[in-house]
Image (cartoon, rainbow, N blue to C red; front, side, top):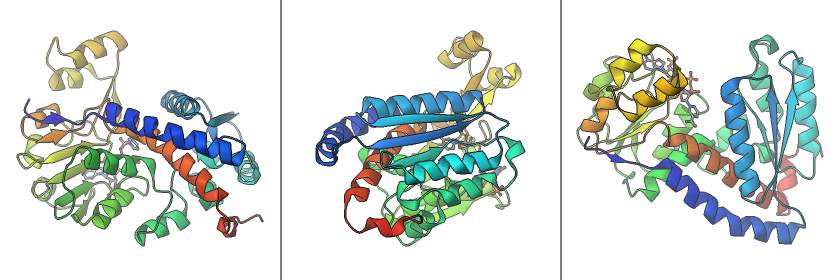
Length: 318
Ligand code: NAP
């Protein structure tokens, strides 16, 4: 392996350490800590793990962090009520509704929920107001995963300005905001998707390649310019032994982890890319911890903004 590993866990720890004093200062000024309200619907195993980690991280940073649980059978109206309560709450500066929502809630459930969250409490940055502000490069709350990746690139001293960046994936939560953040930092950005022609050749143009697809080991060495920085956003849980055996050598740490657990979370980037890339985020330990750290940072930012006079204009209920 030749690529430098970009340690998301270490950078996330630095970000959290920097947040601590600001949280204490806010608490002193406001007479209460910044507050995060999370709503979890159902019992999706991965969501349980993500939510536990978000609550712990916010709590460890000195914030108030509350979880409201709804059963998987809850009607959408009940979830909308929970969000409306958090919108009105004086104690909560940030609101997060963990996705995915149960399919039974309906196809447009996520959109309706995200549209209801007050933009100034939208710590995931999913609301149309925050997406629009990002387009105009004047956003306060930007999606945690893409903004975490920018922190990682900057703190790892990977030059963005002037770089050719290719983002594979165009979702509203990762691909599009990622591309915009890179653009605002003066990268020349190409966004790819499932209909992109000649994808490996386009990806090979990249100095910075971001893979946000959700397909295990999809990005093979032929996608990567030698020396490029590769950011692996994807997380796919593999239970198929033959695929794990094809990807990871016997005796390797990842194979051992699979033998212990019977499943393995892998990224979009094939392990052999480590021999071509200049720098690479591991899975796990790359983008995931940054996403959680940025949620805490966004909650602090939302709290500080809400304390400033004049921001109540964003509040649809006052
Ligand atoms: P998504 O909404 O499913 O979007 C996936 C994107 O990948 C789509 O734009 C899709 O293209 C594109 N795509 C799919 N197959 C492709 C192919 N064969 N060639 C080129 N592009 C292809 O997923 P998402 O929410 O953005 O998440 C992406 C991945 O990141 C998932 O694995 C998710 O679990 C992971 N994730 C991780 C974190 C973290 O903290 N580590 C956070 C968020 C997401 P079309 O638009 O053409 O369909």
